[in-house]
Length: 176
Length: 419
Image (cartoon, rainbow over all chains, first blue to last red; front, side):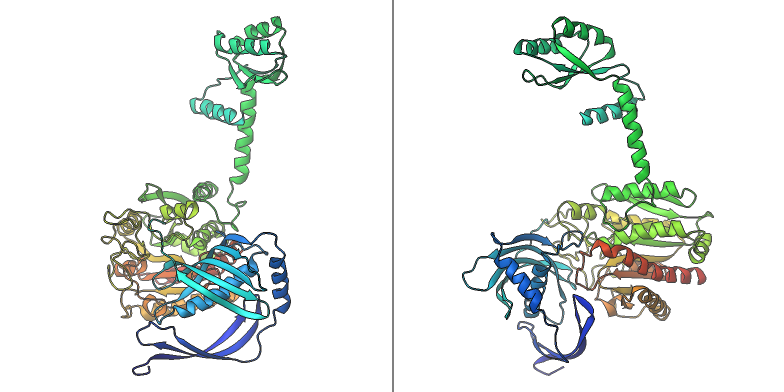
């Protein structure tokens, strides 16, 4: 507890590669939640060792999307039965990374967000080398149990980090 | 045509009559417009009712005509005398219906076994209702199906009773699917119910349990919500009851119980996912269980199964004060979670609801506990968020298998600690 500022947490955690459960990396982090909860928490972290190199998989995905005749459009990832087709898996993973940013920016000490589903994703045509995707995702907030639709525009290129250039909370439909 | 045959078979079966003996279907080949006209005239003016199963359209296109037995001779004379060529396509409609009925019953019998049911998939509400009847058929001396009430939309609330006899034996209550989007729970419920039935007489633990106790298992505890997740919104949680003062539908059935009702960790906003409802037990889905457990009077354990988070929880959720039996429940949870992890390495946390997950008022297990059911537990099954509610069906059987270990620990403890 830091008087007048907020609550600081010191964390020791293990990062596990989603695609390879045996590949783990130790991590320490400090998270400062500000008083008032209207600014995103400050996060500082250090990683012991290196994260796996995903260059090859990134390039394969990048080239595949670049060579599509029509812009990619997809819905409900995963589907009702939890399935994600192999072609959509990188789209799913990209959403995970991008939603991590959205979650961070909207977290307080009383929230716990998870990406529940990609409701819809639409590729946006670009003239430069970047790939751009317009996602509508559903975030599940654990404490309130709410499902919150969220729009996010994601930019990516294998040699650059993921960017969320725009995001906004969407209204929920009453009877849905 | 197949539809007609099926319809006819059903109609016949319903009236237990053989309506179509000797009837035939003729395939007629009109060679010109004049013959087509003649056929239309025949259909309209025949003394016996005939019916085109395939209407005459143009020359060279076949028309199929159903002719009841009494009219056969007259129709054939008519066709022959007008040089309209035909063949007998179906010699005896009744024979065909009988054959079809036999095949249908046979194929249903193949699917009609709980040992060939596909437990590794998610099923529709109707498939699960059918499966329940199969389970009872396959284990008539052990399993029966009770109806404890109706949902808001008048769906039946079915409970499977596992009993080897006795009269009002001490009982264990299990429920899955109270939150409809938690599909892994209904799926685990089916597998588990089958496991209980299958292992009785084979596995010493479940045999000992069922030799002295009964198990009541409600698999689709929120059928309206479940149907809605299949038809409209996969992530629907609540019931589907209409609230007079709001556009929003549904009450959180795990905030509707009379235990700290309306308190912290539940919402008075009808649009909220944790809306507690206008008053405790307002939901039929909840009230029916309350009535059942209270009138049974001898329920010793209530285990309510949810997802996700990988937790084993016990009272209280409506207060941070420890339950009187906290220590014993905590020890039992610790053991169950450890045995669960030994199966596939799945890590669970455990503790009281308020300590472990969040404050939640009006929950099933808090109500059960405050009404004398000491061994009240809530499971939160796989996973921890990667797939969340949309858990891949490939994880159904592993989840059910590891959860079974924990369930058995709890049930054995209940058996060995009568009160």
